[in-house]
Length: 235
Image 1 (tube, one colour):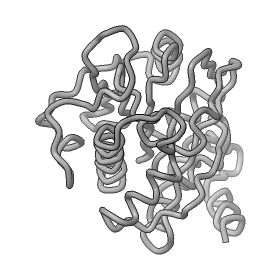
Image 2 (tube, helix red, strand yellow):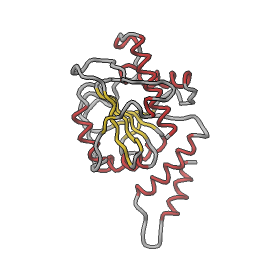
Image 3 (cartoon, one colour):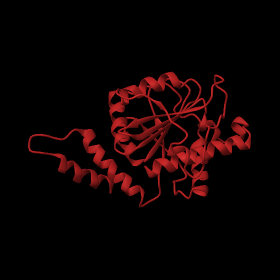
Image 4 (cartoon, helix red, strand yellow):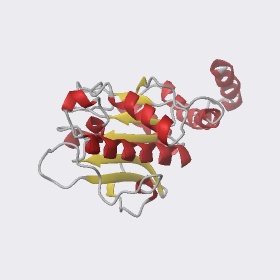
């Protein structure tokens, strides 16, 4: 069905002497995918990026978060999280994508434009700060939104007040002895990217035997993850 839909809309975007820009086409295409999500099982994905950083870190995190959400906030997310490249048209299959890792992140021009179109068309990005990510992700997100900066999100914001209420992000692992913070990118007043810094939510979602975190810390991280998914699906 996806292929037929793409063909129909690409024909609509053609004129006698012109073809509309690819990313304008993708913006409308994504609206269709968001609508389709309400009619079938929801999907989420890990974002694959260039630069050599370990985008594949924490492989048990999203499966555990999916199971928690399906049981506790009644989502219908497919059990297996997918992988999608930052520059791929396939990103428009997913209402929310997750990015993590410890090292270098790099978006080329195509990836940066693709992410911008995805996020300004209704997609949502969650970035979880594994140690060493911060300097890279701030620089690369400037390619996506040159005109915008990360802003600290007050705890009165809806993302902290879904099924679960938070007045402080969970502190899963110690990084630099700093208070955990939630930062966001707001496009035209809408939160399109949530970045947990010095919190390490992604580690908190992993199997207990990987990091041996206390159950209460893991549960708190899963609840905040459920809030993020709930917010992204509603907005």
